Length: 202
Image (cartoon, rainbow, N blue to C red; front, top):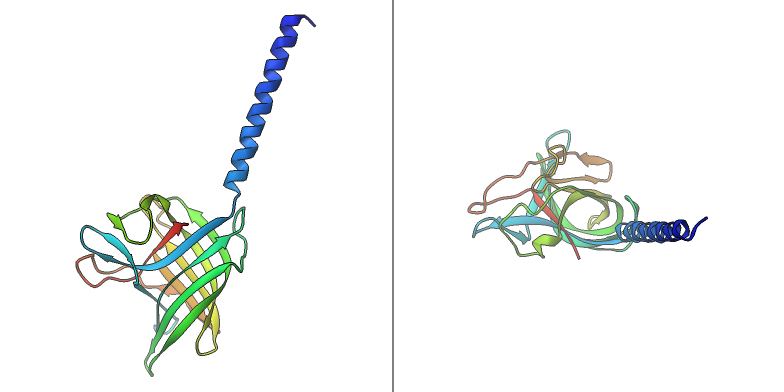
């Protein structure tokens, strides 16, 4: 092998090594745990400003309505999905049936799964975090209700450019009853509004 050939081989080897190192580093960065805040939000003026403290509802098979307010955080493990006990937060619940209304608080006890979806910040201003850190996606959380019942809360956020198969709002279960029929977003920033959510990386 001539000197010129050996030099070309060494350059090619170094280039390949650098490419592999960059690819590996990129995969590591992509695979890092995500620290995520979730909120059930409300909108206000000016424009469409996103705020914490909203409410969202879902209905069971008979049309009974479970309404939740809340926010919290979770740490999603590296890689796709994955469970975690690194969670905070909760909120309040109100259950409305033909027989009357009951209410209380709930606490998040664990993350079942987090899946980020395509999408960017869909509003004008953000009173929760940096709009650049907004994320669309689906989080499934384990929750405990103040009356001793247990369930899961699914928080789904549809941003600008998110596929239409991703809904905006929540569904939840409470013991053996599944409030599977989410109530669609309603109202405007200038009126009473509900059934909207947001995720932000922290």
